[in-house]
Picture 1 (cartoon, helix red, strand yellow):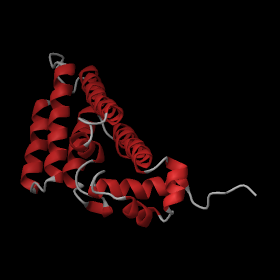
Picture 2 (tube, one colour):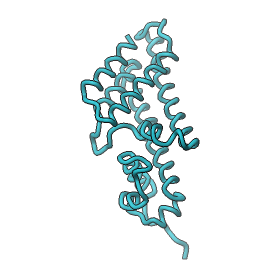
Picture 3 (cartoon, one colour):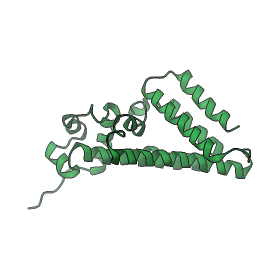
Picture 4 (cartoon, helix red, strand yellow):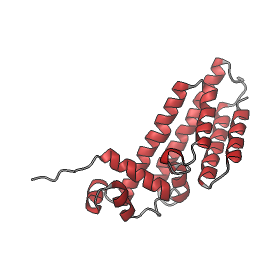
Length: 193
């Protein structure tokens, strides 16, 4: 009789994502993953080719849920300029809320693994490029609607906003106070005035 998996793969990846997000790749052992996901070591290796394979799936899952879907939702809910500010506000306010670890799994991974793992580095860079592209689209849309000055340089401003945003995420992970986080958000707003 063929072996049948007895777990929901999406749930396993979600649970693993939270473990990696809280402790990082190196800080999360296979035993931690077994405990977090509820599947045994053998199933973990069979389904994901081990810890690294599960990490890559968790990183992709995070990127979909916490970057792609989030930016999509924000852009549908807000006007272009306010979409950019809402991204910063959410990052500044969401520190460790709703059971989520501080910081951003993609940013944490950029610092921990990207310099040493080209495949993971490419995943992280692709995600950062998508955030920058989102900022660029919102700036262009704001210029078209008249909410932003036509002289604002979209590409340079989007790069600067990405840098501020990544800095905010790093500071959030390191425990920056609310005042610091609000200052970064205010600076992002000032760039769009």
